[in-house]
Length: 271
Image (cartoon, rainbow, N blue to C red; front, top):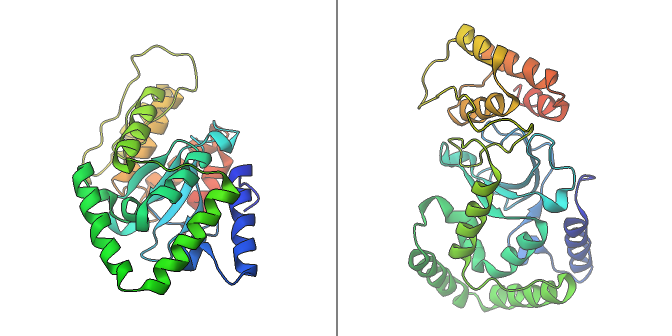
């Protein structure tokens, strides 16, 4: 967890303080610290996992944009639901500071758990209300949660986000303004070079087989942005796996681009 930016280091120190008092973020809010090597096929290669609710492989990580984001205090926070592929990714916050605000505000982690099925603020609120009923049946659990949330506000200086659904939509809109190429996973690719707007795209739909010769020809002249968009889309479609020669090719291309951390991430998926 050496990569954690100051805000998340502070949150971890807070959790350690809670544990000395017989409390924890895990028991009260439902999130535990995750091993950064937590590897799933659905985890973008440029996401550094740092927390998890401990069920179904769900985890939360920092988006490095293939190493372009060097100050992780500025990194978007992504939630990954491996069991929900291909609709397994969601941008939850613009940065770690806002992620702490999100945690303080997302009652019962409703958005974090259910983003793939929430289509409106009304639907989100209905789910929150339903979860609140469960808490009413366990006063001890509700008391611990409220106590820790109050302490979180005092220690972290976080602020309540009144409209979580609207906030997440704002996060996605902020991301769209950053990218030069959209991708099927909803994350997109940010600019690396000052290139023109006409960036070529290798279209991938569904789980189509990939012609490696065609891909190699595409990469021979494509921009970094176009290559990374292909990689995101191919991963999203489940095409980069141990059974396909595409994986070795992608690893070699990432290596050429100096993206060693992403190469190591791909290596970690050798089951």
